[in-house]
Length: 182
Ligand SMILES: [Zn+2]
Ligand SMILES: [Zn+2]
Image 1 (cartoon, protein in one colour):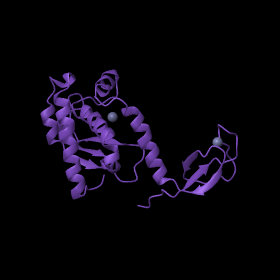
Image 2: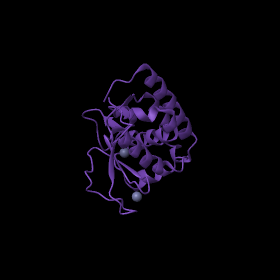
Image 3: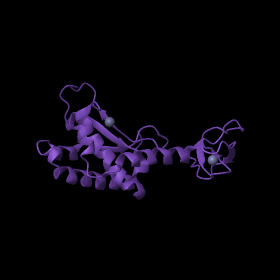
Image 4: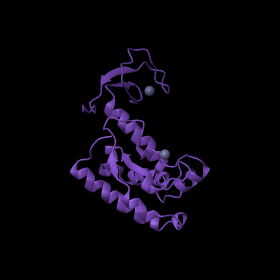
């Protein structure tokens, strides 16, 4: 958890309004108290988080069998989701967290059904690309195939121990020019 900057606060509130307005038009949510989601505080995850794109944190001592938006302490999103390139995916992630906030804790069949009702269709592909993007920014090394030019971002050098799966050529190590030092 990190404190959002002024700019992040603005972007988070724009995203919140967008997602809630779409939800108000979704037949899946007609009986849900979507408006109460406006009261759920939004924050950002630490910049170097890679595994999680969003998280719903519950207040202490809440009734886990009957969760409501008022029981949410905060929803944190990955700060990189606020970059304009990830706008579509950020809406999908916030909708995912809002499903939790409306009382569905587990990723069960009902949850997945509601999640896939979000009008953005290729959201799961975006999720994989976002993970890859974060991994690439953090990677110190790129393992490169000299034949097909594929690059595999990694924390450690390959030291000539790995081959390209496609070409069977030994991979070579390059320093990652995308590395972001935070
Ligand atoms: Zn979840
Ligand atoms: Zn190759």
